[in-house]
Length: 603
Ligand code: AGP
Image (cartoon, rainbow, N blue to C red; front, side):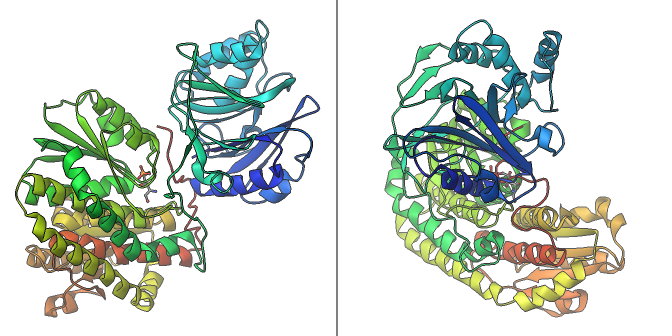
């Protein structure tokens, strides 16, 4: 997703902007740029391609005796190809305005046509450039701040934007549906779409809200651009939850975050259990139905939660793609609980689903980022303690979400009297033991390297599982798609017979998840069906018998978890590692895969 960073002050501005842009890189970007006010003139510099921010910012003047205003941006293309013209900042006809934006202006085509009819000349294919020309047009008739205020009310869609204008020694900005945070240190002000890009300079943060428009010069003034009245917001010290994003001695963030999972899981589950009494109070009712909404890996985590909850609580659970749920005009029942799952807490589709549900149901969010938008819209929040997840492909956040769902399951079971509090200690020990078993899987890396050698030249792959391991198969396929660009599909193992089995031949590797549970023999039958058609079978299993040995071409034998509902924490690890290792062998960028963004803040 696009990243925005602004600074108004006298600090080491080149270092602030360069480090800030680097901290935004993990969101996925294809170009970057900045604008600054100098001697009353707006200067713009931008580039396509990754890296090179130190060189790019070297042209920003550094003054010791006066304030400078800078706005900068990393672009993840939504409208228009990757090229210098489409990189931000965007300008008006007279090059007096420079603007950066994150979001989507849905009525940009109509506005662009109206502005062209008034003589405006456009130099890009982006929706963002329309905003700059709209500001320019309105500023012909009124002071610039009023022109911005009026223009914002003409924009449909989502925006987090910053704008500079010749002769105005201030940064003006606004947000609607895309995150923006302000930071302050002394008289220096920071503005960003992601706290991680300013946390090195200040922990005094203000969370701007939809409808906020602000002007930052020597002071910061805020008003509601819809109600057209001033707004009071305060800076607050943020929790230490924003931790170091250093890669350490690892080769990539994805590798680091896969290996961090045992610690992240124990930290998540133990921190939630420590808060049990508080959660028992705030989650004040037992729902009659639970609807889980999320996207991507978070949606897969929700599917795993469904198996846990329906088995133990006997409460109906629906798992919905957030993007579908938000527009389906869903039917709500009086005692519904909607659980949103989001690592970033800023995914536009999930935020939209939460806002839709907020009108008619209690909301609980499972999230990895404190103070993000989605928990901010919810009645309750369960925070995972995975730490910042920088790799675009979710790994530790995904398993931490399973930990949070397992905790929620226990919390509701306690409230329903299905389990007693004294059994919690055993559950915590069981959970910790399972997390420790993940480390045993890391020692199998050499075996997985050999399997990755077989996968690296393939174009397709199937991932099959049954029961609670069907969503694990989906997640394994998503990881393989995301980082190695191999087309991989996840499927219920039994569903193979209803069509996809036509795909099986010697070129189709099939990864089976086969654990010791009530489906074991059924999975073996499905494996036989594939074997009979020449498929290459890679088996992830927590037990070995003659069938597994005779049918599998490759076996990854993982430790067994006593609790069947914790087994996904183990079966998903080899799938993460296979995707990671295969991607490396295909020279793919595992941290910033092509076309992807870490946080999808557009629809
Ligand atoms: C997962 O590997 C992907 N990066 C993506 O599917 C992600 O899970 C999805 O965009 C949801 O993100 P969120 O958890 O931050 O809401």
